[in-house]
Length: 327
Image 1: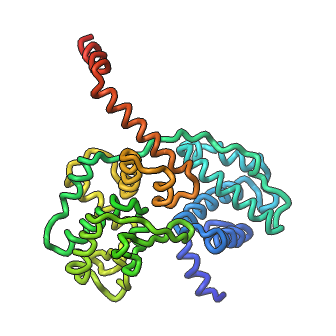
Image 2 (image 1 turned 30 degrees about the vertical axis):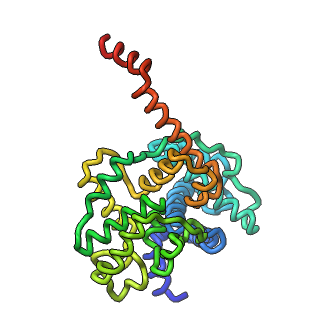
Image 3 (image 1 turned 90 degrees about the vertical axis):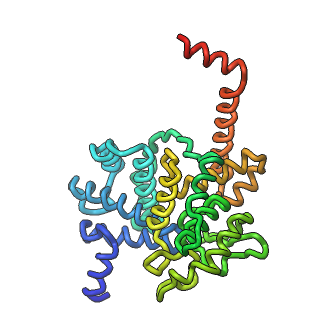
């Protein structure tokens, strides 16, 4: 590799120049392994790179100059260091996962005799229930982008398919025209790790998509558009942030006072299906979850909703509420 190409590679990989030469190559080989063999997404790989760079800078500042000299005590000292104490438990757990995976990779490839992070316990993470929109809130949001302009038709289609199929934001941005299987009321998406799945799409979302494709999408087509379904005003496929801004605009316009992201539509999609009596395994397949335990969080949301309904409408609960108000 020439010096010029190496310099360009460093610019494309944030933080690589901050690592000593003895550390950098091992990190990049590990990240390549994550992408090519592990099928990890680019966002996950970037998060691991940031975590490992911060960790190895701490190791280097501790006086360690060779990777095999890293001990469990040094890893433990990093996990309890002042910068890490300021992070959320979930961030610390992700950092430790990256460190364990990295050292485990080095051990499997014969570069290290052991994994110094293997026995370190991950912090306990309290599982918070995600934000979910009510049917009335969803209807208010969907009622926002109604009109004949290309932008309104595009935005309506974005919101309809987010709620109607529960796609991740990366899956929505990656949709291509051949993935729209309208004759079968399905869309094909490529989820985490490049896994393909087929997801049902409702009549309302199909109608919005067909209107946008027939009279709207051409206004956004440019040299870099290819056959992506959703295109920005810059005439190219949306970035994750671009789609997030579209969602935020219409949530604010609807006056919904909740912390809503594109992923909130996915949570709402799953919760509303289960509230309506859908089978948990079917919802798991639609969401593309590998484990059903991931999907089961929505059963907790369903139970929470039932408790709220009970408290709001059961006569004895209302009587207790009235007594509390009078005290």
